[in-house]
Length: 469
Ligand SMILES: [Zn+2]
Image (tube, rainbow, N blue to C red; front, side, top):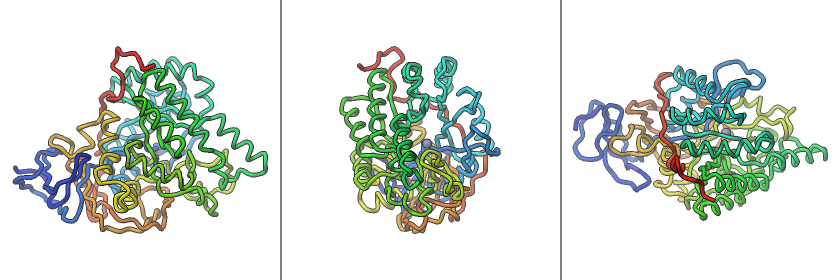
């Protein structure tokens, strides 16, 4: 077949296995696997693995506007965030779209759609954040789902979650009936506030106490509550950035009962433990939940391998190093979030596949197929199959790089992994058939990214079904 592009000589990996064959691309899609292929352009994948483009369903990108109280102040927008994604082999992102004060979820979605249309260079979806579970906001959910925004995010760690729980539970039920996946930040608000207040009262509470200020018992309590809400409503739950062995145990038990509870973890927990918080610039590792202990890290790696963790999400939420290491911060006021879009996949490959902790097939499931399925994008995204979008990474297992955040695309200007030696970087990144990374250079133009209309999450109950009890 005559194609636009052929990726030749690589080992092609999907969750179903690996094989040595060429990939033919035309019209932005994969049109042939193996066999006779000619094309105007060939990418040399010899010695490399060909993986589905990474899908990172958890990023926080801001609009390029000056910080305003009440608005997030992440330093990356859809433009710089896209460049970081492409350099790290990610071709689809999911942004947390938080209403600004006075905005409804639908208004926030319209705002971010306009911003992303102008600047995004990778494909994207938007997750409406239900910051205020008012009847008017909840009434918007079916319309948002019907328009293709089939997820909603809530923060159990916000005091409002508990204060307004009688509105929250029906909202989660409504989301599931509309075909939405409910994303939950699982930390118990009262227990976190209690731990922080106790530290401050005892004359402690600097950022070096961050882990102690948000104990795993608070995460486990929230996960247990989330599981109960899932059981009561029948709505599927996706736990973002799960961090501890205790919380993973709760999620595993829920799965064993057949409940639609899904687990994302964040790379930070796979590569670092709480001891780094004691470093002089420990603020640069602050995110919530906090870094945990070696036993938690081992449990998460086991979960990645045994399929009790379903996805990885970068939770890319970048600040400058100066903001992160501001000595005025306490455990109550610390700026949360780290840059990770460019580093997530290569580091998972280096520390996971290269060491034998996870298989290549598992890597492809965690970074592409699983998020595509859960978020209603499969099989357009998340796999290497005829008819799917030609989103591909040619990853060179021997390509070595020492992490230097100052030389990376995020405007954060640092990485929590600065100095780490990482093997396994993209030789090429391909998005809908366009080569967007080659020779270490991102060649994508702003605005080429497309918004993706999503199907219902397959984990949702049918519109007429009652939830499990
Ligand atoms: Zn987040």
